Length: 429
Ligand code: ASP
Image (tube, rainbow, N blue to C red):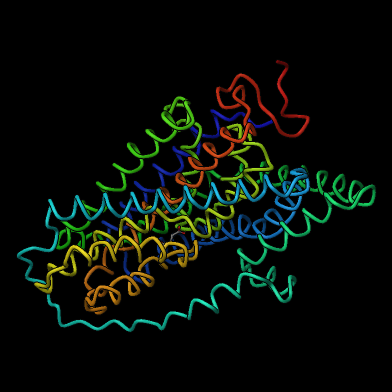
């Protein structure tokens, strides 16, 4: 059985130690042939970090399929699936719109790009965005195996829901499949818990490698931009989610933050909402008390389409770029930013650095130079880590709210009076 508080503590220690050691290596300015760099940072630590991320990723597709098919089959009536879906998507869009609005408001107060002497003679190649019809059609898999092999999350989600609904409607045959899936779900969850035991080392290795190679010099030039994004991320995380959890779900937000903290460490060190899905799902179910029927849908969907942190970066970046190029954004332009950044968030895959690519969409919509993206690339790595932590927190907050409103929520688990999960983890209550 996992000792949760010890694990949380160890993950945070691993993260802190990795950050310090990596920063020391960076400050030492190790030569390319230095054995510490060759065998340590780029050898052992890089290997440890990459192996850890790979072991998280390997779980994503089987977990999402098994867990969601299981969840959908347990929600026997189609109307509750529709209601949960509509509520979740509505809330995801709403929080993202709030996030961009907050970002635009703060950025207009701070003026991060005013009076800059940056070289705006830069180049950035924007990729074409696909037409909406294709985007919608692409949600339906023509070949589910291919969708799984490619890790196309929306297609896997659609396939799993369809199978789950069919299981619920298939009488005794469906019952047998449901039982098998429930067992598989337990097994996959157990595997996640096993991997969580090595997480402190994995997070440590990732942080050492990242911070050894991370240049902070760019932050000095872009301090106003960097700290505006960071400030709004913290504000949205501490204010918006706390208010939603308190006012809409009537739950104590401190408990939410405490239980969810380790997941943020994973998101921070991997910069990937997708790779974090297994840990988010396990925590949302076993620590926040969201039942599988809701969490199995809201968590993978959120990791795919809900990116509040990314939208915040895009809001601040838009104002920054407009100011750096001495261009004005009109009131309708701002509304357009809110709309496109919210939609771009749906189109941003939960993998490192994609938010910067979809920023091109937002800039194009308001007629700002896409080359402006090159101005902020230098500090994006660290901001990516921070915004990914906010992205996954948004998924967890909305999952909790939806589950509470649907009566698919265990208050005792949320308040840590009891622990669900596999038999071994059940405490004597
Ligand atoms: N790395 C982010 C995520 O995985 C996406 C992004 O903003 O680039 O959530």
